[in-house]
Image (tube, rainbow, N blue to C red; front, side, top):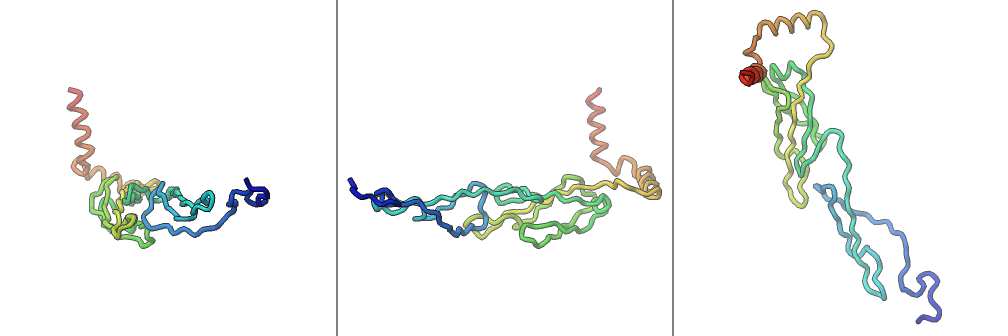
Length: 178
């Protein structure tokens, strides 16, 4: 028994204090990753060495990218004309350097292009995941009278052959009714 215990530690040999620590976050961490800081935990009893401090990371969602492991997914709007005729588009990348994607003529909504090595870093590895770009074909919402006439002429000229998915869908529906 200690006859005259210390006022700050009440004889336990340890005191409570706040301490600011710098933590290095490695590239490629995921939500829930645990980082151990050796010797930065609670002080040990009766002169024992301090324990370890564990930091659990929580990641916020990104406004453009969805993450699954090291792979990223991004939905990019593409004008209907570019999807129909083909062309190049720029897409955002996580490293800040936009990537070019070739949109092939006749690209359908929901088509995905894979950009190898443009995803997230992999923890403790030099490799990176992939970036998957989903094409979201945009249909015009405001058209002039002339544009509407051109679209009507296009529809008349195209017939069913220009839309094989629609034709196949309706053929399956009709076959099911018999």
